[in-house]
Amino acid sequence: MTTDLRPLFFMLASTFSLSVNGLVSKLLSDQISIEMLSFLRFSIPAVLLMWLMSLTQWAVPDSKKLWQSLGIRAFCVAAAQLCFLFSLSHLSLVETVVLFSTGPLFIPVLEKLLFHTRIPPMTVMNLMITFLGVVLMAGNAGGFALRPELIIGVAAGVFNAGSQVSLYRVSKGSMSAFGLNAWCFTLASLMLLPLVLLTHSTDRLAASWQQLTDLQSLLLPSLLLLAVCIVNTQVFRVKAYRLVESGSSLAPLILTNLLFAFIWQISFFEQTLVWNKVVGVSLIVLATLFNTFGPVWFRQRQARLG
Image (cartoon, rainbow, N blue to C red; front, side, top):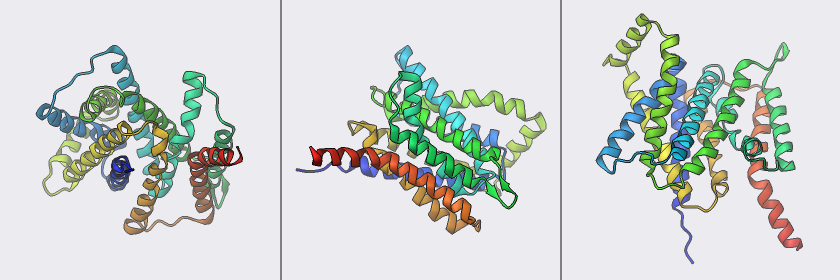
């Protein structure tokens, strides 16, 4: 009996690309505004995906329900990236990635709100552990304060959960991974465009364009690398979900993003975490591990007892 390892490799490729995405975004956050970076993070991959789709098989969502699902996903990914980049510009890479990775914890909460499903007691416990971890991360020499970047970092996790819920639904359709993400990123870009125009004057837009087209600057190559990583993250994840019966079977592999982020942190940055931040991050990771492996362990224990 053979085991299909393709979902595993696709998900690992997705999480590795996601970690590089975070690394490049951290480096770019000092060079370009959050609003413009968010817009370019989606508009450039959208153009790339539309071009690839035109070379393979052009597809347009063929139902109102699919357009609605794509719209919801586009809003979630746009909001998640805005929150992620704001948090990333104020916190270390590892802290931001850990907060962003709390998304799976909020999936049962969103399902409760949207589909009136029951929230498992273990999820409630894991959310409490996560809250304690965030409180510890908020500590400093002057005491504890829930700084905006921490709250917005958690919000990134909430929108990430919404993105995952909508992704699993749209991935079961007939459209290709290129098509789904091309239209999703296009919608996300259109949602972010008014924000860019409201926060940037004409002179600031001209300066951004000059910086983008400067051949001596590494901004454009970095954005192109970011676009490739974003495309790889989403396309490989859709391919992985299509090869499994349940999205929960791939959930443990999403945590490998934390391992890659830790490697980038010690390789490229000199930021150190004080004890309370280490404990806070560890509690959030522990809660995420409980949320992933706890139900499996309980099912196996009940099977042995039965």
